[in-house]
Length: 304
Ligand SMILES: C[S@@+](CC[C@H](N)C(=O)[O-])C[C@H]1O[C@@H](n2cnc3c(N)ncnc32)[C@H](O)[C@@H]1O
Figure 1 (cartoon, protein in one colour):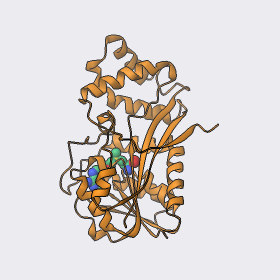
Figure 2 (cartoon, rainbow, N blue to C red):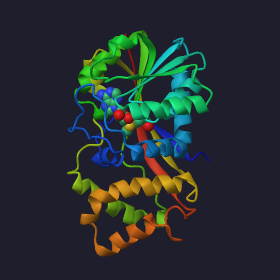
Figure 3 (cartoon, protein in one colour):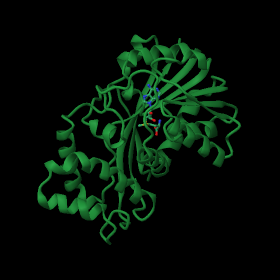
Figure 4 (spheres, rainbow, N blue to C red):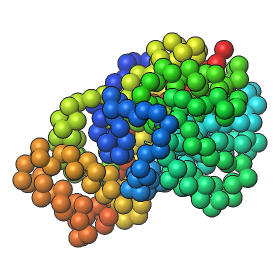
């Protein structure tokens, strides 16, 4: 019985998760980055992105295997990772496309350092390079690519239409763009705490004024001259080991959520949150019954 399943959908998809953008320490849609200057490096965010990749390894394998199938006839030699963060996608792509050189870009040099160490540790340094670059601006100098991948990054860009046009120009005719976004904050609490988790995210959404998590990228893709091949939602629902990385991930994630939401929780929920984030026996790091639930949407578009 597979624990993940996929849904092919064409529904509009704006969700309530400004939350995630903030939890990932990023700007939410509407509070954009401008220019090519680097962010101050956020170690907590980098660690969370690394944990996200470890905890969601199954999803990352699924989405890159699917992408490999779609790109099968495309002869993938050069891959661009847009907003690579700590490099989980960069490494997954380098593994999935063993003939390809992968260029990881980000606004943050600190993130790119992480990508280089991860590539080293994975024995992929020879095929992975990094470039400090703003996808909204200086992309032409990076050359031409067969495949571009943008995971959880385009919702942070100030002028996404311009970024999409830059990506179209960076791809060779027939080249593929994969845009992936998290649809809502990943749920991780044990099922007996699902009601509390609902209240926590409702408080967070309230604090975030209910902004959409990510736009539906379908129209911007068409406007920028892409042809949409397929849009697919990856559903994630599987047990996670609470005493391993998932416990650390959940603790780090909820700590960031908590900063914005505690004012909107009642005393009992605030006390419960403190217990869950703590080092005691009921803390998330100790619990073995965490369960990952969430969904991520991928758009695959082709430059005609
Ligand atoms: C939430 S992280 C996602 C990282 C990674 N792709 C992943 O899926 O784990 C978003 C990343 O996009 C980068 N980013 C934001 N705006 C960007 C831009 N205009 N150009 C390049 N990178 C950008 C941020 O610095 C951050 O590292």
